Image (cartoon, helix red, strand yellow):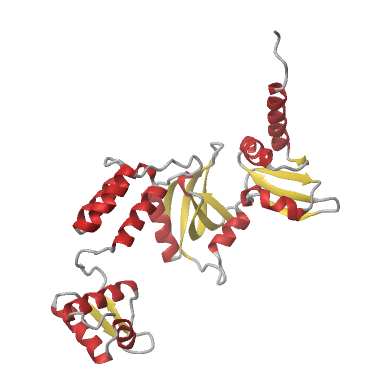
Length: 321
């Protein structure tokens, strides 16, 4: 840090460090502030004199942290942070350019609270930047998402009511391992006690979340993103089995994880999975794979592929006159 900063500026910098790194020790604060440990403790004292509740604890897991619920001074963003925040919001929520959109209203309040020089540029960016909505994205209910995230944090089993894309509804007790955002869609990665297996559910299709008294322990080596990718194409009502004449290494780049898992075979590879929407599987996924394939199962997917083939064949039929 610059050596000519005032004690007030260093105290505010110490506050910023404690917000970002709860449990920072005096020597860690001193290193980040470029001062001695004694001086770092003095800046903590300045914060306490200003009414900011900074707690300290001794021992190997000790350090300084802000008391839960502490009211902090207004947040200050740098220009890069403010513009990056606006860009991220518009990227994920194109409607945030409108003041009557809930996210847009919240973004407007943040921009109004910024210093004039930074807020002016953020406001101009919001006003003139436009984002095209992703038709594949799906925004879940904030209350439902919050309830699931809280259950993940508390490691508490929940009872969910779910409605599939096909309109089928059911209830299941699940151990919520993680909430994962993938390509504009929010997923719940969990262990379903109804199926006694790992399941991935779209959060926007969860209709209700009920707490239970049961606790759980997630797998120690859990990688939520990798586990989601691996299990997206399993557990749905309609089985799928597609055989390709091309090698697995050539087909793999064209196969999305929700389509199932690729396995090598004598003459190429085979894709095994399941789906809740055979029509979408056929016309949006299989139709884009540039290799010869045969659908060995199930019956619903075969019918969906036949419908697509008939529609494409009709496009080549000459009309009278």
